Image (cartoon, rainbow, N blue to C red; front, side, top):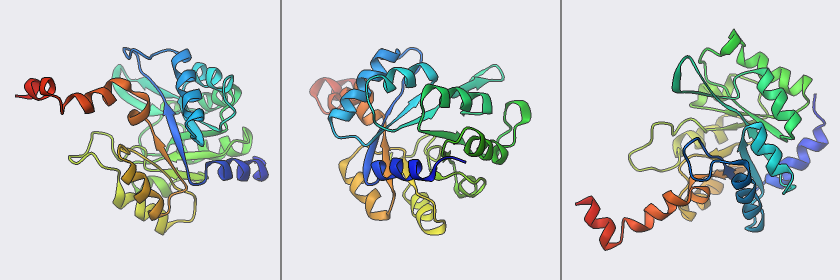
Length: 235
């Protein structure tokens, strides 16, 4: 079991703060560890409380440049389907993330079949007890939030596929805060400062923001769409 005092210190650092998700995928103009480290350092300068990062190489690069707590994940593709992604599906992935310096490991806790037929509840327990690292449950719904003994829960997967109004999953966040006692870290579609205010009013512990900060092309598009050129392209 991890050191509860260390866990409490991490959670105190994250409490009431913004966690910046520094991730990229193949094909992105920022797809390299150096860019992710630069984003993480920029986030620290801007007052971020923590970082969420994907893969060993990115986490290692980030840990060299900042002391902020890092939530580590590893997005894996399999079954010959590029879009079939699972977040940190195996214990081996978790071990590598721990070796890279992740302070918290996020694991998808949906009911989907996992590689090697690993049981997600057992996986979470092994990470907590053998690797001595706290676990964040990346959830699609409330059932996922209650499936394991994860230390933290987050509605990370509830926005997959998008929503018409592109807003955070308010209803699920409210349920997570009210119907169980573990800290809730909000994530998904936080594009407006007003949403951050509302999230903390609901009672979340911290909020993860990704694309609105670390995908410059998407930020550019939001402004371009209101320009004459942008409006002309839409018509």
